[in-house]
Image (tube, rainbow, N blue to C red; front, side, top):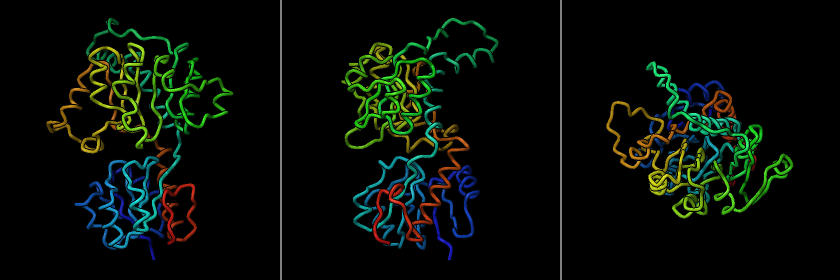
Length: 335
């Protein structure tokens, strides 16, 4: 009998990538809506649900999923800050994720934000389309020789560091578990205060949890160099958005590149082009000329989508077969 799976927060590219990797062992139902208390009734009769970064995997949702017979929540992403792990244990629901789907995808996007902000590519593109070839206001700086601070040296942070070393940057890192390969390559591990004060560019690559929530707040920004470039391709909650706005207004932050946003669940992955956006904080943030925001697309490469689909479906199959691997499961109760 096929494993019945509900895929939430589904977009056409999800249906394509997951469908290409699926076989007759699974029966897929796609839902464009987020998984939450309002949509959880459609999970009746499902064996597993496949969720994404902005779905609600709170205790109330988990309890209702368990009551409907769902035994597995498969996250098709690396992060799981939106998942109540203790509630999953309590209700005997397995939680899996995709710890690695090609870290180069996000790392390359982070560096693309750096280069675009530095050389003002987005502004130059629009000027040339209007027939304006004036270079005033487009002055950048050499990446070579600049100090870049990387917060978090998991696989994405490592990939980012290697790219920046290739540019000739001095790379400082903060992580509770220093990576010897990076040290051998030339990076230097320092404490957070040193990274904040010495870096021309700071890039965030750490998970969101209780310890890292608002890691970049007013106090952290005050320790940074004036005109610093800050990049966040990890999770929106790592930064205090109001503190960012203040930092931009005072010119402490000279460049800001975001692929994530604290309140993105109401905005990202949807078309709002014919609406008036009601999020005044986001509108203020996006009004700055030195801010570049992308809609959580760092993971969005063909290779990464294929790996996400493959690992997610494998997680579901292995859980169903009783052969699940601890390496990709956050909660692994007895089937």
